Image (cartoon, rainbow, N blue to C red; front, side, top):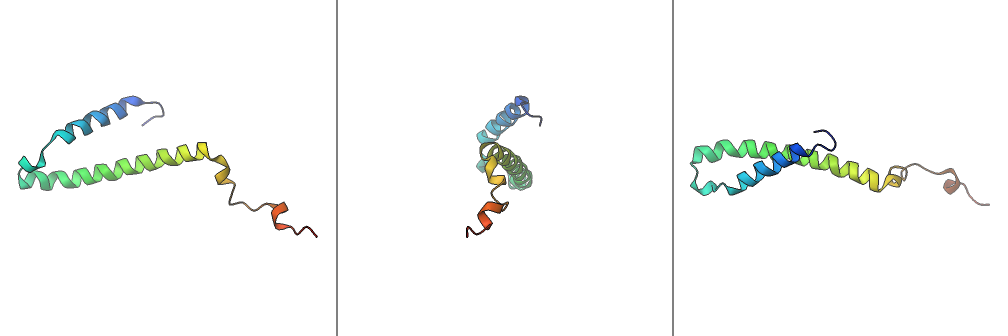
Length: 80
């Protein structure tokens, strides 16, 4: 997905809205068994995308956090 491309997000939201309407209690065991691995795969893919977006957002909001791990000379020198 390209930055600023909202078409994919709209398609995802539409697909999720359709999936939310499905009553799995009315489906056969075979249908539920075949849907579950596909849904879990999609869930993990979405979690990876969300994690990437959160990481990019965090880096923009807190750019100093990337510098926090670097030692500073002035801090490590004694003032004597």
